[in-house]
Length: 126
Picture 1 (tube, rainbow, N blue to C red):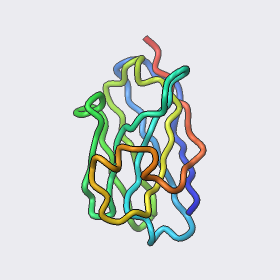
Picture 2: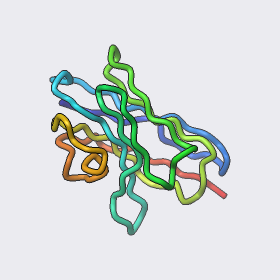
Picture 3: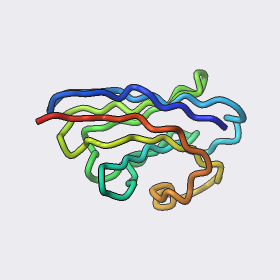
Picture 4: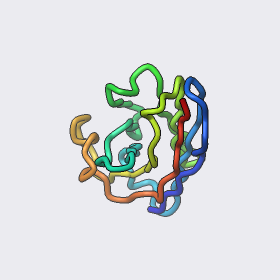
């Protein structure tokens, strides 16, 4: 499975961006796709995930502001980010997990994912 993330950019606080994660290859084997982010000097952290059954999970820091969704026909997962804050500034990575039946808590872990995209930079100015 190959993943390509795009849609990042520079936005003012309070603004919105939509990230996309396009998958190719053996996408039928994917169970879930997640978004993670890594700010300078910090660990990569979980943001949101969606399973092939459209179950969604969010980090507390983005609940109510971010929405993850998927288009099974286009093999693309989206992350709609609203009410952006300067602390949302990071490189955003998408990743896919092949591990069917993983719990929501497992899907918040980097180790649950088998393939990663290259990342897209989101910068939120104050």
